[in-house]
Image (cartoon, rainbow, N blue to C red; front, side, top):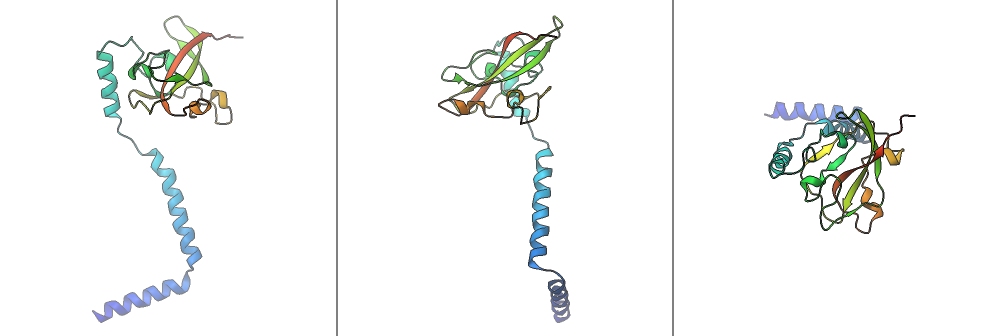
Length: 176
């Protein structure tokens, strides 16, 4: 076994002579940064959330209000209030609409028209956790704040806790 110890010692000394602590820290940093970019693209299991949404649909929510593919939710990012005790346009009891919101333009396939939709977060309770939707149709980068949906819009309220999101039809979008 002494030959194994001697071999390991020689190899370790060779590596120590040819490398520096700074170089090792740089390699470790690169590995950590590389991992940070890979982890967000890993798949997540959302089957439990989907099952909760299906169970709520069975209880009689209005058609489309608990479906992320509903035309009105084309730029919604959050939990649907219809699954959390409210509706597509009203906050659940014990919460209040955010004082600021983001706006999207969604196409209604039933009448072929485009509508302005105001997405308001409902604030004051912890996150609902049911019917998560993240549809980013025509979302703008973060520096276009009024058109960016990845912000906690409850920050303007007394309670900054996010609960769910509504999608209120404001009116028809002007085609000019």
